[in-house]
Amino acid sequence: MLKVIRETFGPLDTYSHLLADPGSREAFLVDPGWGSFEGWRSLVEKERFALKAILNTHGHIDHTCDNALWKDAFPGARLGIHKSDALMLEDADLSGAAWLDFPFRPTAADFYLETGLGLALGEVKFRILATPGHTPGGVCLLAENNLIAGDTLFKGGVGRWDLPGGNYDDLMTSIKRELLVLSDDTNVLPGHGEPTTIGRERKYNPFISATERKP
Image 1 (cartoon, helix red, strand yellow):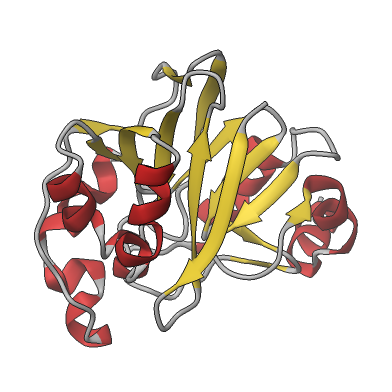
Image 2: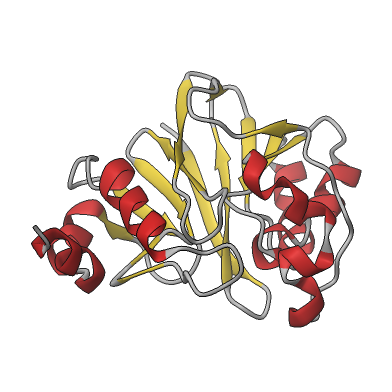
């Protein structure tokens, strides 16, 4: 069973996720926010996790700030993001680092997160769900019964669409086509705020309810 470690880092309380297969000791780091390297490096080394990849659900700086630090310390870990957000990793303005006053080091992606890409930790298979709307290249990651949702879906809310590259219609289409087709007991682990389930959001999320009522 996949081991999921979840903790907030940085001034925007962004959740980073460390995902590990206990058998193989292989691990993915998802959305390394500002402070995740200092907070988790000793844990990764103590647990002897083999960090295979650093995965960004999208390109905003609060989710990507420590990419370069992790790459420096674990050069075997490849950096992945959707192609549509890749330039955000190399541009302080596009990432939001310049106007949020976050530290920024440009770091190019090693590969792109695309639907159908085979990602696995030991025997645990991952699905990449393309969910544009918060950003053009937003993705969610599904493994076992866990959905790493980035800033696509929150408990009682959805990601912002008023930032550069955001689009409300695209966001709601992504949620309906990619997330609401999942089982109600799917655990949703968002990039901000408390965990939830698909069933709870289907029933109580006002954005989804409003969308579902439309003809």
